[in-house]
Amino acid sequence: MTFLSLSILCSTINHLMFKAFQRLDVAVLPAIVVNYLACIIIGYLSMERTSPGGQCLGPNLLVLSMLQGALLIGSFFLMSATTRKNGVGVAALAARLAVILPTITAFFLYGDSAHALKLAGIGIAVAALYLSSVEKDASEAVGAGLQPLPILLFFSFGMNLILAKYVQVHHLDRMTYHGYLMVAFGFAFLSGLGVLIYKLARRETPCRRKDWVAGILLGINNYGSLYFMIRTIAQPGWESSVVFPTISASVVMLSFLGAFVIFGERASRRKLTALAIGVAAIILINSR
Image 1: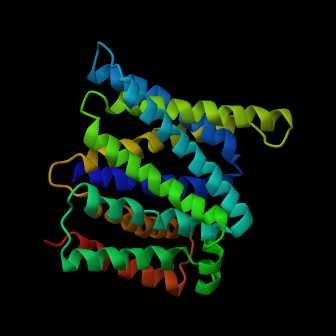
Image 2: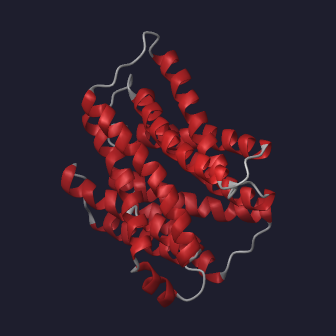
């Protein structure tokens, strides 16, 4: 329960930090790149504490770690492009509903239990995530969601979670968690750094001290969100079809509350309905 709670908390803080970036005029691209650098450092320091002799990832795990990094940075760029072309609501919808993919695969690949209350809870959670992401007219969001960018974003986020679960089941153990994440974030950092250098050369983005500070703070939290999520799905008896929808619905609800308390944001009636549905979904999903 500790790892689950920490994963939800870190993921919620991630959402609120990006909202704060907007308010404080933080340049997102430099902050994201610095965030990955901070994650590398945290992974290295954590790895040294758990394994003083160091860790060696085998060739298969190394390739999977690089793929995880590619999905991390790819999801970020797809999120940015989808937001520009289709709007914030559609981008959020595609990213949040991506939890469907690892939830479905868990039934077929890992033998997760499928009783009526749990399946109903998953369906209700999807409805809550949908309602929380639609800004105006639902039909407009559905139509926009059929366009290429939102579909790519949906699969990118979903594959990221599917890969994390696969690696945790077949390759990771207590001694390789941090090494795996360090390489993944390292690959994402190098990819993002290339884009940042290009943007800086063309003077298309600033890179100020506050962007660096924001990136470091984001990195500390971002590392925790992924690390604690992987540790949660590694707990004996914790099924992915329970963990992923629970984390997603909880993060949405806490983000609403956090935005209200910190930024004074008012939630629409639709989002308040999503909040209530989300609570019901979590209860049903975790019923035995």
